[in-house]
Amino acid sequence: MDIEEFVKTNYRNKKNKDEIIEKLASIIQYYKNIPQEQSELLSKTVYDEVLTTENLNQENLDNLLQFPKTNIGMGEFGVGSRGQGDFYVHSKIAEIIKNTPIESIVNPTAQDDGGVVKVDDTYYVTTAIDGIHSRLSDYPFLAGFHTARATLRDVCVMGANPVALISDIHLADDGDIGKLLDYTAGICAVSELTKVPLVSGSTLRVGGDMVLGDRLVGAVGAVGSSNTTPKARSEAKEDDIIIMTEGSGGGTITTTAIYNNYPDVIKETLNVQFVKASQLLNNYEKQENIHAMTDITNGGINGDANEINKTTGLGIHLYLENIRKLINSNVYNMLDELDIDPLGVSVDSLMLIVSKESVEDIINLLENNSIKADIIGHMTDTGKTYIEDENGNTIQLTPKFREAAYTPIKKVIESINESNFDEDKKIIDKATQEAIDKKDNLVKWIKNRYE
Image (cartoon, rainbow, N blue to C red):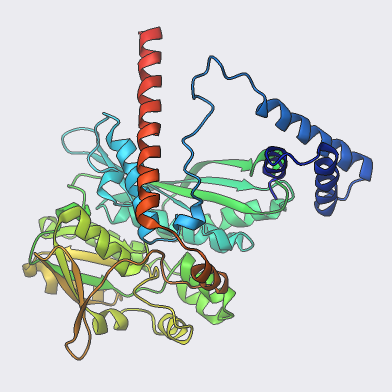
């Protein structure tokens, strides 16, 4: 419960001061076991702070304390839901980064999950960061485990060997400290299994004193190094073969299992096979034949294929039956029973785009190390993704506005949230340019003042 936002909204809607303070005091008492006079004092203090900020003199600050308003909500536009809306906003974030003239080898403009900088002629540093799944707040060990594994994946698929993990955790004011410890233990389980140390981090409260409840949010980052060219999506070539490893899911599948009452599926997700596979491939002697690697996470293979189309300009032809066979059978059965599209959710498989001459060698390398893998398609010149079923029927695979709805609440939201996508895009475009202009003006002001 964000009590600062509660007061701001009611104040801006011109609600009566005494009514706001009284209602907020009752909310505070709901969360806190404190006397009424203390809850009333806290409520009045929050109101006074909001009043100060709402009437702050910003005459000489230009728009420094303002942000470009779109009046489009995160959920309304599908941000974080791994579909068209999410991909579009990420492209706008990438646009701001592209406008920043600082050199890197791979950054978010390529829509890869990991970024790469070159240190010298032969040395590359790769970084990645992943946030915890929002619905795993009450299951901190699993949140830490799957987030750590996800960020290691993002480093590995760029062709780097991970060398360190970092952690960031924010727990709301009423959260039990045991959550912090459990979350860290989850990260350290992955650390121990992969031999990548957790070396630093940050621990804070969500919203400080202004957010009540026990919601847990956070992220895990990873750093890796390599002396080979990054395996970015942009390196895929026409006629390359696409290989996929078996996927058992991660945070998304765990969430699906918990909130749809499939507890036995949770244990299927607890492994580090993906990292093991990536490390094998990073030591493969014919590195030049592995052109690109990615993890099937962002909206499933549907979302990832679309991003590869946009990044490379190339097309993809997939074989549905081969993909199905490479999804863990217990996970696939759950998705099938719940009518969740397995092509639209994160299954945490590794997808390799390789030259034809190395296909057999790579599959044998993986299979000999107990990692199931097979060909699932090839690169084409169409610029689009097509998928062929077991009967030879082919359809175009197009990205959805959101990933497949995998919890009961997502199914409801999918049915009630509507968006005028094209009009919203124009508004977001304008806000992006405003953010770029703000950045440019501030940089210019600082340089003029201090240089």
